[in-house]
Image 1 (cartoon, rainbow, N blue to C red):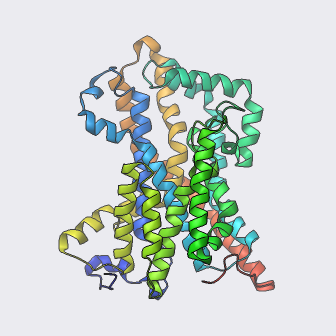
Image 2: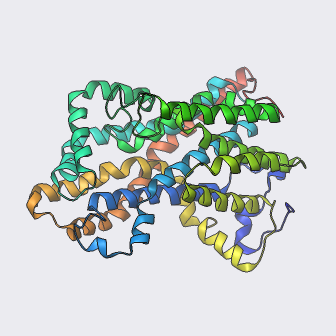
Image 3: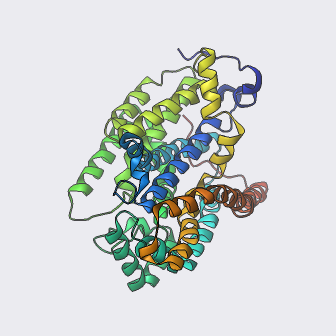
Length: 410
């Protein structure tokens, strides 16, 4: 079942190395990030247009298509699973100290986050026009309430966001703690929480089958307990509300490692499937598809017929999806401030009574190439330099004193 295969033609660039040969990254997973980021973008654009609320021609779209396009929350779930997979891959592929590991992770996500947070703060007035003054956006009463909460507790929200731990705090303690200022960043806070404890979780998952079962049971029970508690989070931004999703990614990557070593990964995959059965069906199906394609990319599934190769190229093994995947963090973080910059001035110009759904749709559609360009620029000039700096700092320190690994060998 998990036999190797030889790549053909232009697929070879992505398929030439299996994990057995030391694969450093997965093009399929990178592209998946791009798809999911843009799913979230489309969802938020449709929400800004008031899709489904009877505001205009957008509602003429087939309802199943509209519902699917507006299900970007499933894309965020896939993002979380991907994070578990990728961090496990990094930790079992590279042995380094905990401080070095954390420095890499901080420099990977924090600089672009802080830049986008600054932009979001600077365009708050335009955001209020686009999302509260315009009559179109869905959940408008919530948005008005959130703007009021931001204004009333601005310093508190800002300090929490600067800590990268804003999603830890329940909304029942501080309303909109996770989603104030830069709404999508609740999941970035969740990711940072995972980074802080990932080495311990992954080491535990690698220890024994009983340990990983206990870990899975503990995360499921913790999530259920929090849902039953008096505490409330608008988004599942506290780690123990989403730990099972991270564990799905961890288990899938560990299964890959066992297969690479000539062992059975079925136990890990079955446990991942049990956890997936409790999550959103769309997220589960998308992850299952792209994980199967990742197995194919790594050489553990047969190449299959030509249509499979063509589908794999279209979905993942091409320069466009690869680039969108590389830029996905920036896309995910900057799109709401960019929407505010584009739509806010229009609302100010025509007034609330003059807002047209088709005009806003045209503005957003025209802004999509700009979003791609801004994402590429943020990646090139904000994301990459700190990543390179982290590599340089760790390499310089490593020349002085080799570090012990943070994850035990299997």
